[in-house]
Amino acid sequence: MAEQAQIPVYSRRLREARERRGLSQRDLGIEAGLDAFVASSRINRYERGVHQPKFELIARLARALGLPVAYFFAEDDELARLIVEFSRAGDRARPAP
Amino acid sequence: MAEQAQIPVYSRRLREARERRGLSQRDLGIEAGLDAFVASSRINRYERGVHQPKFELIARLARALGLPVAYFFAEDDELARLIVEFSRAGDRARPAP
DNA sequence: GTACTAAGAGAATCTTAGCCA
DNA sequence: TGGCTAAGATTCTCTTAGTAC
Image 1: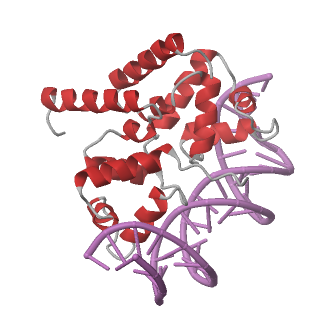
Image 2 (image 1 turned 45 degrees about the vertical axis):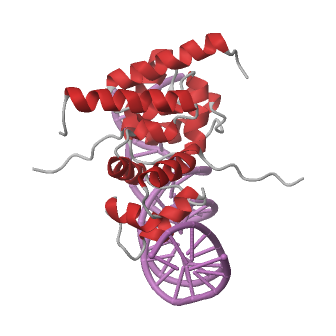
């Protein structure tokens, strides 16, 4: 049987977070600072696990989605939840920089 | 004044974790499955922030260092500590897969 | 409008072969 | 021995131009 290439964690978390926000792939890319003409294509590649974005871009996507970068690399769902909780607690303590 | 290129989070965390383990750059690379002839050069590039490793490699480095991948992307030190605590708790609950 | 893809252009990393403390 | 680097070889991503629903 043929091995199906595994979707990376960050791809899965990216799509989940985007859909939770009700954004299209194009609009998420634009909010992260990508050119409107390439946004859809690029975000699609990342969510499908075809291409790997630069960390700098992941950081911008994380900011656009209101999540810490570490969230996108949490394999464990419980750890992911913990990271979100931590960032929300931080938001109250020290507002937006 | 010239802007100093910022060292990425994962670079900083990688070096810290490696030194805590008392490993050389070469030995860490080898433990992560890199060829002995390229290990030193490549790990050095990652720790200096010159090159970005593939996520697949970060996952192997994380395993070699006994840390979750998310740890290497935690900007906040307190969050990093939280992630380590979580992984240690998990080790007791469900041993090595 | 949204999700998605092929393929050449462009930009990155990887390997080799070293240097310095 | 350990940390580090230049540069060509290699391999990746990015942009463009599309398709299908």
